[in-house]
Image (cartoon, rainbow, N blue to C red; front, top):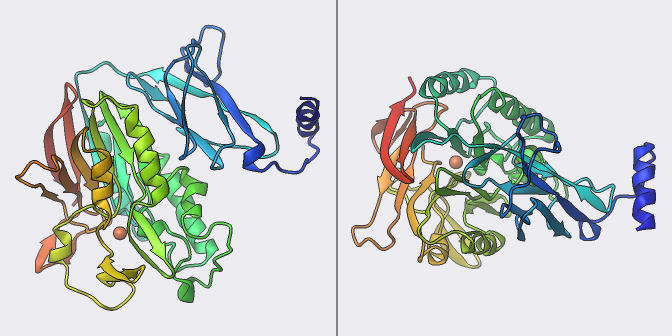
Length: 394
Ligand SMILES: [Fe+2]
């Protein structure tokens, strides 16, 4: 205890102390109803119980007074799983400072609007750069006019981080964070292949030892690359469906995520609808519309552990469906193919529809068709998705 106090004093005096490893750190704090919306826990701001807090590995619940404790975090950030009836004020994730052994992180929340019906937007593939900035502005003006409760963006957020220098990749990430910050609604992101930093090393000339290599650059700018939240009686799960092997990305839900999904859904009521959102789709008609390619960088197949598999769908999607098989899982959302589409099995098993949205960055041509740019707007009424509408972005 004395050592911790000394550390706190030294930090307060601006004297640097050696950083703690995550295994020596305890994160604790409060989730509370920020009644006067000032971002500070005032005397009248009561705690919110049973809110889940996670580090992408463990999930702990807040006590009756809204307090929580998460020892030895597995990641440099923790996040709150937004509960029903509240919306998180500010960022849903916070960085864990490694200069102290005891880290305090609070999550202020505001009561969610009480409506039986709301809409949300599914956008994707913004591929942001100076050239595509007008498309982002177009998206913002359309979303502003639609007034959804929130927007999901399923990856390929920036033009490219796969095959460029750190300087180029970070400037695109910074541009994306800045542009998304201009939206007046919450924006929930997940990474696409273009957010994976430096892995095409013959082009990026980035070393595998780079501290932001691979999935780490996304986490620096946008926090957890898989997480969940509740809104209006629905449990949304954002996933990172992009993995990589040597120089090339491919669709996969890694084992750490599979374990986390299991923990996450175990505390979700079996009747609560689950909607997942990720970049590379679980299943897609896009695969058969696109021409077969055996050349890089976008080849159709990849060899993993000696076995050829598709790169542009999630080969181990059945592992996710196995975890969720006793749940109510109506829709799985994705992007990547730049073509809005739906896929479902008439057998009703799995009882999930697989939806993709188009690209924000612009129209594309595939399979002999002109595919327009656009977004999809979902309407939820009394906890059920009751409408799906594709809106072209001209
Ligand atoms: Fe993509």
